[in-house]
Image 1 (spheres, rainbow, N blue to C red):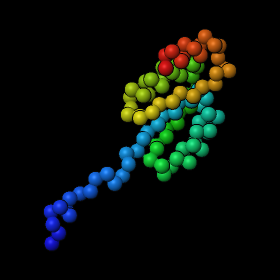
Image 2 (cartoon, one colour; image 1 turned 120 degrees about the vertical axis):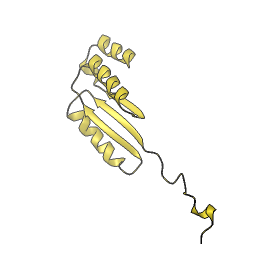
Image 3 (spheres, rainbow, N blue to C red; image 1 turned 45 degrees about the vertical axis):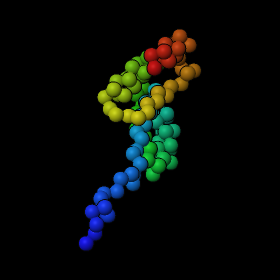
Image 4 (cartoon, one colour; image 1 turned 135 degrees about the horizontal axis):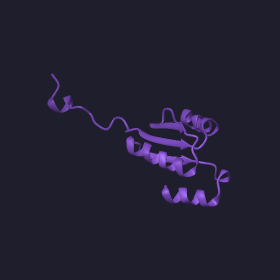
Length: 97
C-alpha cells in the first residue's frame, strides 16, 4: 500500500491558459490576419478570441470595453486602421482606451 504522502495529488502540472481578446475595426480582413496568429499559438497555452466589429474608432473602443467587462479576458487588444479616421477621432479613441 502507498504511503499517504505518495497519494497526494500533484499540483502545478499545467500552466493556466491566458485568454486574449482581439477586437478589430474590420469585419473580415483584420480578423483573418489574427486567425493565423491563433493557429500558431494553438498549443502554447494562449487562447485567442477574435471579433471583427465594423465600428468606428470611438464605438469600437466602447464595444471593446463592454466585451472586456462581460468576460474574464487576461489581455484585450483593439485593432484599427489609423489612416481611416481623422486624427481627432483617433486621439479621442486612444484617450478612451
